[in-house]
Structure formats: structure tokens, C-alpha cells
Figure: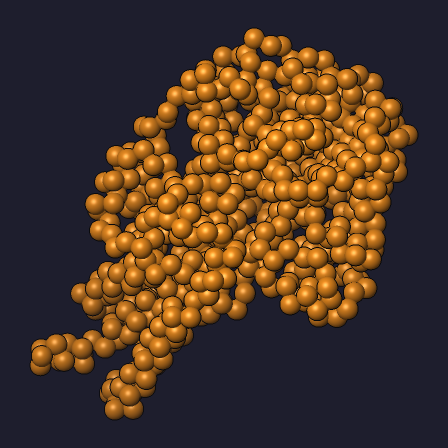
Length: 589
């Protein structure tokens, strides 16, 4: 005991480092809203492992370095999770270059809790620098008190974690315990996987990751084993598992969705596709305020020739906006690891644009973000139009779209992509909301961007009839994905409740607004999916006999809507993943 006491007395700063490491690891899990006891226990082990290294080396600069690296890593995980509600994987790390020009987009996901994580190693470094050489009894008492405070804080957070709240939000926990590998828009949000309540030995589990056929193992393992164990498992998973195990796609399995003997028919109407960055539906349902925030879209949704579907659930993954493009143009779901646009740009993709004599995509970015240079022709577009330098504003995108439409006469498919509603919602900061004071910052800024983009769309809708035949033109407006995940939506709830505003609590959706001269106005209530947009568009454009039908349903067909009693998204995600990894449509070249 005397030996242990003397070691602790002489190396107490290393033990303090151990306590702070534990705090950082556990805080990262709670900031991600994980909260599973298995994860917390595993992160105690992760902190113990690093703390052991600190004790063995016993150098203040090692304490400082390890704390800094752990802090940066945990902050990265928290920001990525808050932005995407997905765990950061290896492919996503290698796509960091796509943040060029969007570095400030992470501002929306940084709050005081994240800054607290960043400040901890700085304060600790200052503490080590100015620590007196003689360890007085006062310093020892202070150390003991601070350690007790931190331990008590962690204990209280674990003991009072709002499990019932997450039952309501995530659904039946028992379902996830029995189906821990599911990765649907429901499953990808869960934190209660079958591995969540177990203790693990990293090397044993890394070996299992390399030999099993569970494509979601890495995520489940990370949930249960914490930040530190992520790296060796990720390396084994991506080198031994993903690259070697690609299940084939038998023709019989594809038959309900794909008929390679059919040729692409001729469309019966032109089409203008408008993919709006981060377009969520709830601002169109804020009562009288909607007519001020988005008067043009609000009015367009009431048009006698418009079908308005308010609730389209986003199904994008790590590819985010690029996945939104793919879902709309091809009807395929994103791959499970990484982004399709970065890894499989050489694939052959089914698409709508190749059915037209003239097709063009207006890309608001000069930079080759999301590999657009290769994905534009992969999605069937003959021409990509982009700024000579910099970025198109949304109004410039609309003007460019009108200029393109004014110079063509053939049957055409033209797609415009907007960007000004991207985080951190800079354009909306000076928005005069004309709403009661106290609106949360990001809600205010987002609505300001919404108002601006709505004015751009309004100009387009007022002008488009001057350059195209509206009797033979379909206009589709939708969002590439939602932007507010559960934590930011929850931050709006108190304000929304006070004003009786219809703001979702946990999960938002995109609107789907379709104009066609043959329509009678209808608003289609219910919960639908991005995979439904592609088959709906095929039906409207007279392309029902397209070889690739997509996974979803035609939302304008009331029979299909009624008969859809289940949505087998887990299977469709898996099938689409295998289709893309195997380049299944290459044989139709």
C-alpha cells in the first residue's frame, strides 16, 4: 500500500489526466445523445487504457498531447453526429476535402457544450504550467474535491438519463435489441443495438468484424466500444470486410424492380427539377406566418394544377446532398459506407434525364464538390452549367435556369440546384422575421434563408411561362435532404409551443411539390419517402415502362398508397447497396 500511495503522491497529475479523459469520453457519448450504459462502460475502459499510457510515460507534455488529441476527436464525432445523425466512418473522414468553401457550415452544430470540451485541455495545460512545485495540502484537497465533483456529475447524468424520452423518440427499444443491425431511416437513428449492453475485448471483436457478414457491425461496435476502439476496428473492417465481401444480386431478386428487356420510352412532357438545399416542410405550416416566410411556395402549393405532398422523409447518408441528387434522378438508395458519388462515379446508373433529347444540370459551385464533374453524366445529363468562378446565388441559379430554358426547343429535362439555404444560414441573419421575439438563432437564420430562396423561386415561377410551353411542362420542387436533426429541433420546441407553432419535435421532412397542367389540386397527407419521388415522376412523365421502376410507389396513385401497409427499407437499403457495389446496371450499356 505504501508503494501505491507513494506512486500516487508523486504522479498525481497523471491520475488527474485519467479522470479528465474519462470525463471527455463520457461527455462525448452524452453529447451525441447516446446514453447507453454499455457505451459509458466501454468509454471508461478507453479512458483507462489511455490513462495507463500516461501513467507509464509520466511526462506532462504527454498528458497535454493525449488530452488534446482526444478532445479534437470527440468534438469531431459530436459535430458530425449532430449534422447527420450518423457515426463518422472511414470514408467520411477521407471526404473532408468536400468541406472546402463550407467550413462555416459546422457553426450550427457548435454550442457551449462543445466549447467546454475544447477548453478542458487548455485549462489543464495552464494548470500544469503554473502548478507550484511544492504540493501543499490545499492543492491535494482541491484535487480530491474536483475529482469527487466530476465523478458525481457523471453518476447523476447516467442515473437520470431520460430513458422514457428516448423510448418515445426512437420507438420500441425491444425492437432494436432484436434487430440491432437494421439501418433504415428508423434504424439508423437508434442507439440500443444488440451489442449495446455488453463488455468487449477489442481484438476479439475486430477479428469478428473481419470474418462476419454483418455489414453494420462497425457502427454497432462503435456504439458499444467507444471512441478509442474505433480506429483498430475501422481499419480491420474496411481492409478485410468491406473490400472482400460483396454479395451478388441475382436477377430474380431484381425482377420486381428491373426489366432489362424494356427500352426507355419517350416522355410525354418536359420537366424542370428544382432541388432546393435543406428545404424542410414545417415553415410552410406555421399558420399565418407561412404567408410571410414563404409566400410564393405557400401560394404555389395551393395552385389548381399542383400536387403537394408535405411529408417526405429524408433517406440520405454520408453523401448528403449528392445522395439527394441520386435518389431523385435514379431511385437508388445510398450505399451503407461512404458516399456513392466518391466511390462509384464510374458506375452505370438508371436515370430519367437520358430519356430526353436535351438535358442539363445547373451546378451552383465551380468547385468539383461531391464529384459533380463525373456524377452529372452518370445521372444522364448531357450538359453541366456552372459559374466561371465562385458560387451562384439562388437568384443567379434561377436566372441561369431561365436563360437555358429560353434557348431550347427540344423535349427537355433541366435540373437546377440551389445552395443559399446551406448551414450556417448566413443570408438569413438580417431577416426581419416579424414574429414575436425570442426566436432561437438558428431557427431565425434558417427562416431568413427560406424567405430569400422563396423569393427566388417566386421569380422563377412568375417568369418560366414566358419561355416554355406550360401546357407540356412539369415542374418538381423538393429538398435534397432535411437539415435539422433531433437536438436542434428540440431547441426550437419551447419557442414553438409558446406560440402554438407546428414545428416537429424530433424528425423533420421535405415537401414534394409537383406542377402538371393535367393535375387537379390535391394535398396528399401521410408519411412517405424519398424513394417514392422517382416512381412518381416516372408516372407523370409517361415513363412507366422504364426498365428501372425504383423501390417506391407512385404517390399520385391512391390504390398504391392504400395498399402500402409496410415499408421494407432495411431490405431496400441492402439491395441498393449491393446493386451499386456490383455495378449491376453496367450490362444495360
